[in-house]
Amino acid sequence: MTAFYLMIILFIIGYTCIALEHPLKINKTATALLLGVLIWLCYILTGPAIYEATGFGAGFQAFVESHPGASFVDYITKSELIEHLGDISEILFYLMGAMTVVELIDSHGGFNIITDRITTRSKVKLLWILSFVTFFLSAVLDNLTTAIVMVALLRKLLADKHDRWFFGGMVILAANAGGAWSPIGDVTTIMLWIAGKISSGTVIVQCIVPSLISMIIPLIVISFMERGELPEVPKTSDDLVQAKIPVWRRNLIFCLGIAALIFVPIFKTLTHLKPYMGIMLGLSVLWITTEILNRKDENINDKLAITQVLTRIDLPSILFFLGILLAVAGLQSAGHLSMLAGGLDNVFNGNYYIIDMVIGGLSSIVDNVPLVAGAMGMYTFPIDDPFWIFLTYCAGTGGSLLIIGSAAGVAVMGMEKIDFIWYLKHITPYALLGYLAGAGAYVLMEIFLFL
View 1 (cartoon, rainbow, N blue to C red):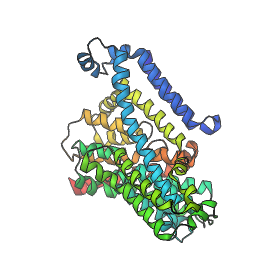
View 2: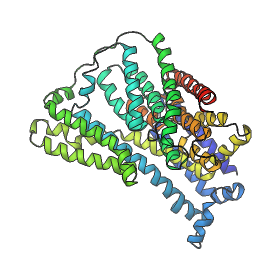
View 3: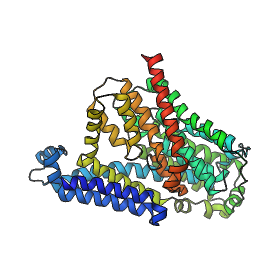
């Protein structure tokens, strides 16, 4: 059992190093990768002892039955690790595809369709506009894709790094809030929807108001604290290249790119294939289209070639995802998260309001997917039970409390190099206020409207 607790200690130390990236001057990606490997190393060296002491890893028996003579090491390397790596790879390939689509739109000046229509330089007005765009776009796409799109827009609208950090933080909050009320807006809502725990109509009706409040309350507070005008963004060499592209071509690439992103959930529903397959389909169509369009113009072909666009993809962010998700998967396999879910039920005597809110808070530290999966395995409430609906809200919006608490946060953190401590100081208080306000709104709505 010493190794069981050592894995927790390693996770805490690694998490602390990620949080203190700038004071330590050690890149968070390197720390995350090391953490992911060390947790699995610890698990594979002491897996049998953990299994005997805790009883977790029950799949080992089924693995031995289908693979006579297999050891616990074989079970970890050929079953658990491969299964987790498959799930993680789906996220990473989807992230790479979505980043490429967004970068391709941006390189062709497609986002000018939006930015040219946003004329205000008022910090407060722009924050409200972008937050609402993010909120509703996240419900149609998902919070990860929306965050990537909005970062591309922020780079067009904001020149100062810290302005982009602040707006990026609010984009995370709005993207997670927007994803919480849509059955396709977040990984956890998709999980609950597919598993038959929630229905699309009920989760929309009961969660849209709390989710909206979780975004609006911080915006109202910020409106009284943040004033002033934002400076104009200076022209760059990329803008000069984009100016040579015909308007019809820019509009076409924008429409095709957004259509490719929106098509992903439709593709998944129609074919039951994973989202990364849908984004790869959209990327391939967009790639072929741009190759055909750009080969006729040698002056801009080099700048807009997909091979050049791919060099702009933020590989450190993708590797950071890999490390963090590997670490959390190791804790899940060893039984830490299942014990956590069971402990919550015992401590709070089944009070689902508190359990859901704690799960939401913990989802800012540990990935919300295994936490929600643990809750799904523990409870047998019927479809659309208040426990599942409130869990949908909490797991979706709770990830905003810390910047590495959601896929959207990790993506924005990597793309804009936002500091963990900076986010903790400047965004977390607003996120916590919104999280609690939305939770309170849900409880009141349930008491007076839905009971």
